[in-house]
Image (cartoon, rainbow, N blue to C red; front, top):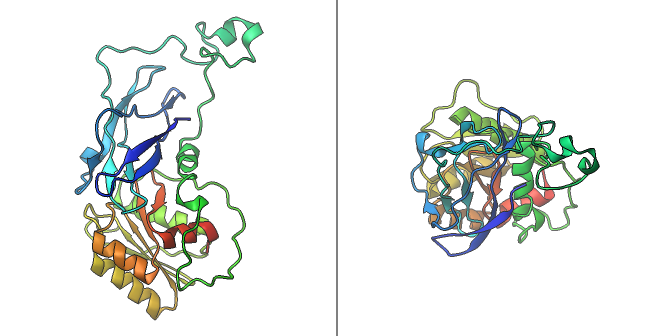
Length: 288
């Protein structure tokens, strides 16, 4: 599992912990993007699908594949940044310890070290979705923030849930499906998705008993009007309002959501929603 690294937000200067996701290569070996920590993170104000992918070479077999470009949302101001990645080195080949059972694997060649943990022993490839979920477990969910006005203070803690298993986001439809899965993971029942293919330039509503959610798969930060609209829809339906965005939120939208107690989430392309305000932290901590 990759180690967590500190990432300083260029907008508010807060340091956020980030763990690069691990993906499975076609050969079965774990692959994670090599972060370039010497370069500053890039403020993400406009997202295109072509720029959202990065080429990463598997160190075991040398195969080059396209994986989501590492991104992280600030837990303080909601700003989304993209982390620089080292490009594949020209002419770099696979390492000699390709995996268990190879002649270069000391564990296979020498039974005396078969149970050891030496550098030559290859680990079993982890589940990339589990890694992504585990990397985010140290963020907001572990420490609920101040109680929003619309949630009773005496509400009991939710039953412990298994780690959320994200799905890679490649299209607007993937973003809507991921938000629906996450809401079910939080405990909302019978989450309904709209029929038909989502329009990339428009937000999509999700409904469930006691829930009104909106998913914004566009490449622009969600604004004040969008947050107020989902709040009004929730108020009309006497339901909890939740907002998901791929590109973060404007400062006005973030401030208004805090005032209204609306949970805000940012989704990166690994499919792992991240809470960006106290109501979202509380929702993750308590569940539906």
